[in-house]
Length: 365
Image 1 (cartoon, rainbow, N blue to C red):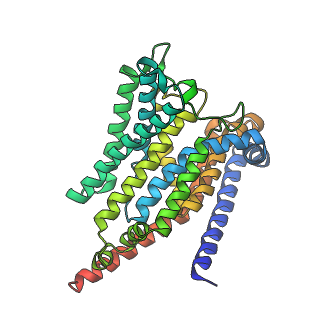
Image 2 (cartoon, rainbow, N blue to C red):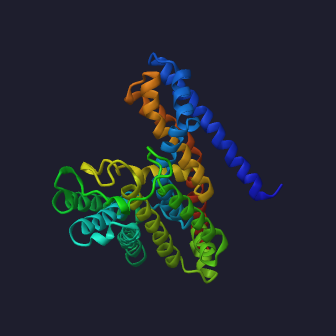
Image 3 (tube, rainbow, N blue to C red):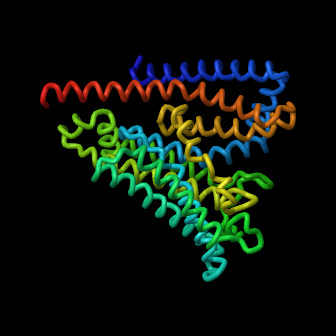
């Protein structure tokens, strides 16, 4: 059996076992709380994955976290712990809203597909700009990416909130920004649903990332630098280039996610108070990446599953009568169980790289 197939089957088996454990623990929590776990899971999975409307909601929820999962996963492949997707997503959404604001006040021609392209472009440019700040701090000053991205996430939050309150607010409804003009919105793939062309954008970029990482020289160098930066440098590969490239790809992904949430998520097509319609999507991407083994193909399926869990929460409330707090606990238990193997493998890889680096340093190489 080929090594890649053996490892793939092993990771798949780990995921299945983790899912079973998560479901069992969640069922125990539901039962102890006085509710029917069978009815709870039936409403969750049947309505999220077997009902056509519920399926569309699951796919809609998967679109942004698929892209923020790519942001984290590409960082891991480069040997980084990039948790900046949250802030970059905020800034990407702001870029789309700024185009909507310009269309409303000065350039009506942007109320068209041209406005859609402009919104995506500005969102990506702003998100990449934020990502490259962390990249340059890492390359030029040695600032750890966890420290820089956490700080930049909060800076992004308050910058976007300032714009929402004082500049791009909706005069008719101050609780949100101006909405994207109707002709600039992403087309819905199913009438009366939340599913828009954003899911196609997410899948397309994820597949493009897979091609880049596994079928180009730049992708090979990025992964090589992540596995062993010292050995990569001896082989003529610059780890600094891998850092810049990983943040660049991650920034594009997060920018697309943020802009897509504004352009393709009815009924708001805007940013709401406290960034409530965006909050947490960047960190959910970390979970998706861990479940998907930091591989673009795995991330597609992981995002769909996590999106289904999020979409199914409302159905557990409606059909099983379970309070929202209990639904969140069950959802969290399942997600944590699924993410544990990814955390274990990532930690093992980090310890292996550190051991190799110390051995090389001890030999004076």
